Length: 301
Image 1 (cartoon, one colour):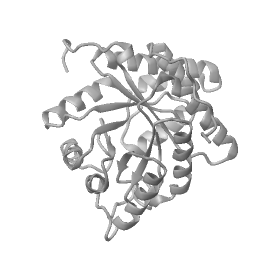
Image 2 (cartoon, one colour; image 1 turned 60 degrees about the vertical axis):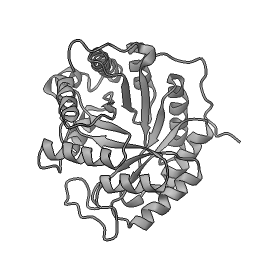
Image 3 (cartoon, helix red, strand yellow; image 1 turned 90 degrees about the vertical axis):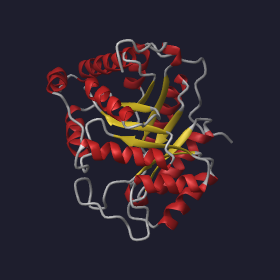
Image 4 (cartoon, rainbow, N blue to C red; image 1 turned 180 degrees about the vertical axis):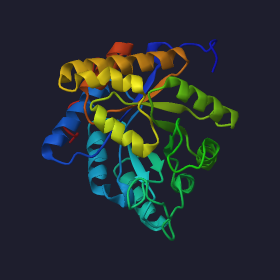
């Protein structure tokens, strides 16, 4: 990108939101309220995460079904770790039966957890590129995949990481959603490298308003992201003052999105942590348009 890149109008910005399956009745209610509140921004889709080896298949399926029943554009994450191709394809058929037409195709974490060696399942899809190809062979799904501005923690180097993204695109991926990041220069350098590799699909920055600094620092260490010192310095003084901490985190995320828009970015994927308040505050602070309709929390009859 260059300084001559056109700045998108706020009304032309496309948004999407990520949720995880709730683990209690109370958490369910919070998720439906969050989805209903964020529906005011007319998201392109709302994705739901999926556990390694299908460990959350039923909760994910139930969550996606409910969102679709609310009239929302739900997408499901899908992993291939710990399962045969036939087992993964059967899961796809179950999601397709409830109306899913968009998958976020991921390899998934090894059964031993993040950081342990990955071994393809015998008879399974070896990686995300093979999973994308498998999905493309089943139906005309919309297929999003992952991307890593700071490199996937198990990639030997950035070049190998970009090559894997290219393989996913060649297999039929239509969009890449990035891991969260806080340094926009890192994203811009990554995007320039991706474009030089001939990858032309949208590379959508993943935005994470920081609800809990310690939690984000721990997760960043596992997923190949970094938490800059300046961000920790800005938020850590408010550890015992949640309202001030939230205000500071909202300000930082709003500045990040504003700067990315100034660099020509027109699509954003928000990691919501199943909460609407901070994400909504960022969206409003940036000036994203709301519609006058808000979906109800109950599924359609």
